Length: 496
Image (cartoon, rainbow, N blue to C red; front, side):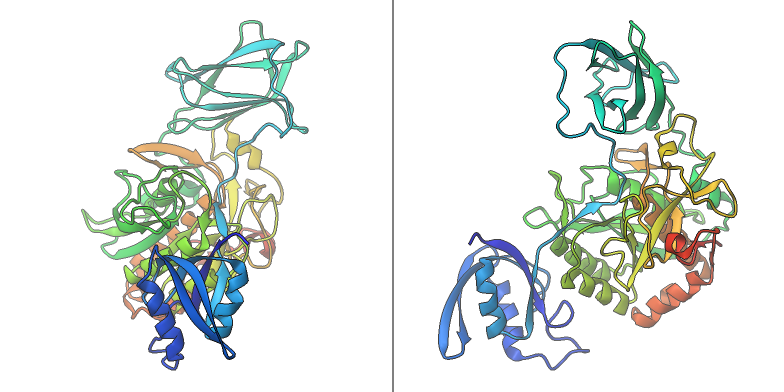
């Protein structure tokens, strides 16, 4: 059978022998320590099973601790040999997680691209009459069945799409700029012979989106405390609104120092957290540590990368961790890492996922995670903004408030926060708008960080489970229901 990647870890926690667990079998400790000395080499280990000695060859790819978690490549049929020889270790399959931002609309698979028919030039311009290049344009002539065409605007701000000659209108037109402009949704757009000109709204960084509506930072008192927040994501790009103080890339095989955001998602998330840092003069406020767990060439984040990132965030003194990701199969390694964080005074906020009212995904549904669902508010995004697609019942006590259509829900939801049409940072000092439980999660993390800095004593407790429990009790006392049922909002939203 072809070799696959697995995680090897002790029977409990991330490290074999700790002060809380001193009675570990020496064979387990020695085995894990031996593996640390053979990273990226194929090694044949002889394991005693009954009266036989079986050589088992596998490759150690990476290590979190000398006597702790390892990432290995091994034939799955050989795993039982390890577990029989070392009953004190677990072997967990590598699984992958996705960003918790809502996916862009797309043409249904199997829809053939037209080579003949009506060619329509769609031109994107800004309010300042600037051409918008590099934006993805998706036009549906039959939205329910995913029928339509798509393209990307060129340097002149236009793309040409082909439709059947009989086409007279576009049912829905979606436009996704990379940054600087609001994503757009237009419905029932008539097609003229000369094409279609579409105007995009420029992003104002001070725009009163849902986060700014509920959390007007300008009205909050200034603070001079410091709190560290670990952002486990696609990396964090340079931005004047983000106080980035460190971090690490934990993707196997990539440069540990490369925390560059190749996607934009992590920078947006970090910007939402950072927006709560109203400081006195140049005091530190919220310090962001970036842990890049998504590969720079795209793809999902492995549970191993996430485990290593959580471990590094604990070691670096983080108080809070934001994880705007999910969707992988539940696994012991990720659960143990979140539990380890809690035991060291660090709490993990995790997005519930964006499966259109699906069940809360893992790891948000793990009992020691703080699962955050998403809501929105009418009037906090411009006309024709793509965010309008997320408006749906149920509505709250205030009928302008709604649970986002994409948000996963269930009994595991702990809290809700704004996640529809959120303005935040993009790499290289730009701004972008995104929606998702990915955005709600850092809104919750950010307001909790802000309140903990203001309270001032809890974050200075010793880093243990008492600190974690104290933090949760503190912000739990600040939560209020918006009038949704608990499966949508948990205990509610955090307010000052």
